[in-house]
Amino acid sequence: MIDVLYFAWVRERIGKTKETVETEAETVAGLVKELSERGQRYALAFSDLGSLRVAVDQELLDFDASLKGAREVAFFPPMTGG
Image 1 (tube, rainbow, N blue to C red):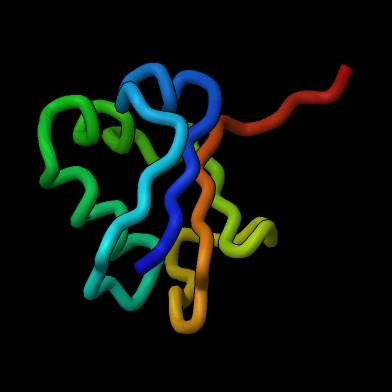
Image 2: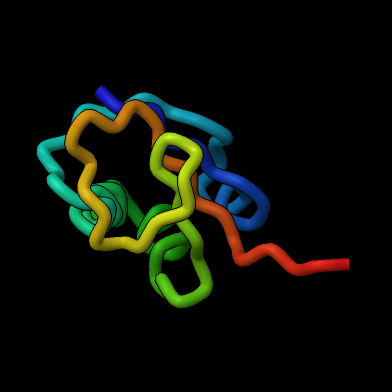
């Protein structure tokens, strides 16, 4: 089981801030594939990975990052300074 957090427009598209999922995925990309297959809202949210960032256990990583031992994955748009 892994907690998945959604922020900003990702949250708005999926309609949830957080959920706990059971996954067989070994990488973040594998998790994204599983989530995208859950329906149109998920597919839309994950349709352009170039516009998303991911953190695994609060560490910014790439989509090929391993989920081994991970407890939390967060998806959010790129942050801008200001």
